[in-house]
Image (cartoon, rainbow, N blue to C red; front, side, top):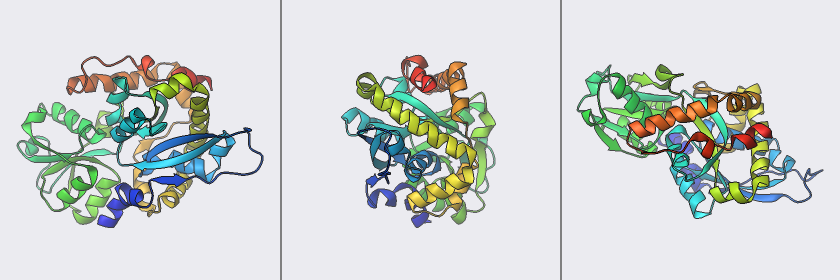
Amino acid sequence: MNVTRRSFLALSAAAGVAVPAVLSGTSPVFAQAKPVRVGYIADYFGTSLTAIASDQDLWAKHGLEPELKVFTNGPIQIQALGAGSLDFGYVGPGALWLPASGKAKLIAMNALGLSDRVIAQAGFSTMADLKGKKIGVPEGTSGDMLLRLALAKAGMQIGDVEVIKMDPPTVVSAFASKQIDGAGIWYPLVGVIKKTVPDLVEVAKSADFYPQNSFPSAFVTRNDVAEKDPDLVKRMIAVLKDANDYRAADVPRSVEITAKFLGVPADPLVTESQNGKFLTSAEFVAATKDGSVAGWLKGLNDQFVGFGKLKDPLDPKDYYLGDLYAGG
């Protein structure tokens, strides 16, 4: 279990924080490639477009020379953006309150995730059963959001359970060793836990709340990059669009590419890939133009306000660069 867990969240960092991309040296589209620092998270949702871009030489196609950096979560990438040590990053839905508070700009949607679960030890079957029990959750993640939604649906509040804040690897080990009664966590980590605790119970899942509550993941950039270098942003969006369409056309092949990139077994990534909706770039453009993306983000903002994470979030048009995405 430990090796698999670290494959997704720890060993990738130990193997080298910066991962050089393979670039094509023939017929470059641009006379001079722009250096760019790009963050990713070592799972399928957080890595697949980066892996595809590297495998298919999309960086070179769009005139970029990337330095790829692995992170364990979105908020740390937002911090890196703020510190000026990262140009673009990947965030899950739980971290989107940070762009909504002005900490970064969204440049592209990634996917709609359905991988989150509230899980419990055998013997528990409902949220009510977990009242007063220890629930491990990575704070500010989609797992945290699902836990709160599930509690509210059951007529409960966050104070009705004993929330223990943990990073994702700790949730895995704590649940497996029965130090906690439940957890707000996601696939592929739920699958990792099941190998040790096969009788765990999935008390709630993100699909229970879709489409009223969507869980989009996205790509972000520094505010000053968005303001001062729109050409770099356009090139990055072009890479993401090409990689996104490659993935949408052949998810199984994208799983193979991602597994090779990460140096992990493909099976957990297959499970993760089966818990998401992968739109084409044309569909994301249409969703941007018709207001659907703004609706997803507004729905998240309402959750963040309800959870006490934000008091006065920005309007999505003020932090999603939809004009650049839809116009490219």
